[in-house]
Length: 195
Image (tube, rainbow, N blue to C red; front, side, top):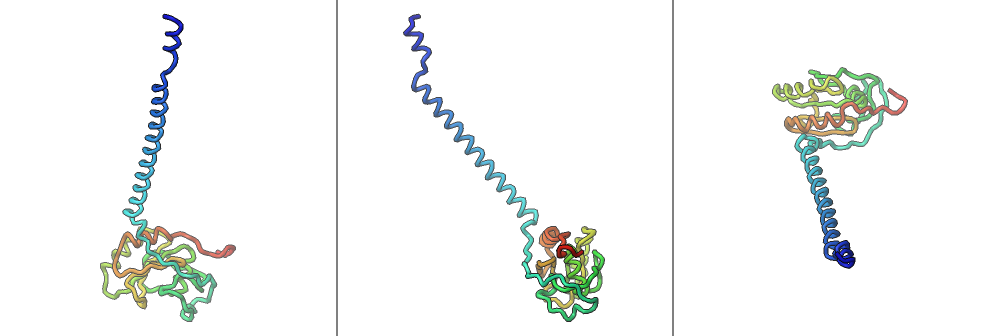
């Protein structure tokens, strides 16, 4: 083989060299497209899980805080709270036990339980044993930081309260109630330095 033929054989052809670069560029674009598609699929799955697990069921309304001042037991009736049931404000220096209560709870105790990270599930109906049973079963799943009690003077059938948060319902909605409890239960709201 002559030298000229050897050199010609060793040199890459311009067409081959260009198509190799194009193939690499196409491969890089394909990888970016595949990553983008996977990212979109993952985001869609996360959003789907969020909505179908009830995390989006939390419809709580924010309420301006009325502070954390302690008052003497028995004096909460003179306080004008900004929601019914209350979500913050002057309250007694002690809490009531977590769990199911058969009698209404004084607002002064309610607010202190909220300050300690509690969630109150309260209902207004006189002849609704099925509703009370469903609410009781749900509340019993939480050994601490949740209270169920009647609240005969409120306008709504069910009220969910946490510190600075309220949601009201006219019918039992397990996902919505559970989402509220899970979002706010256990969050302490004491001013720094006071417990």
